[in-house]
Length: 238
Image (tube, rainbow, N blue to C red; front, side):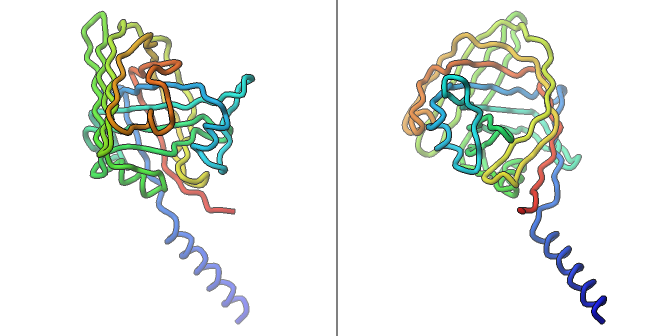
């Protein structure tokens, strides 16, 4: 009788754990999906960046006491979730390299995108907005146009850069959401194109005004030949 009771208790624990934990979701895109990423990077006092990510995360701090904040915009003409193909992905993130992962405290996207729903399922914050991002290949140059628009304001970014990508970068990446236990991880690769200058315009309240960021970032680059193979997971809290 005692053994039967123990088995029932174990079975109930397994069922409750499974019910409370989302099933892992596979997310991927490759070079054929016309995927690009645009990064605007800001070196800021670590105390300021710590306030943005909260106490659960530890930003990487350089020898000058600064941490790195990225405004990252990404697009793909198509992408896959659980091997099912979806079209027209457009996302904008604030992201911070931390000791354990890259933390993504804020994302702006249209909530009707399937990928937006997956982000929310795994406790990534999604704020409703419209993101536009295009890269036009003109042979010797690439023309970049991006926009992040919410009900409160808009950021517009335009640039023209030489079509001269660097060497292929391949890396293992882990990105966390609202808690360290919700994340996606896997591999990504891209060829970076340095952006020396860009026209950045803002209207109303934006991330730049909210976090007191100067319009011109410290560094900018474009991910070309961008691909990734990630899996969303939610770890059971200790």
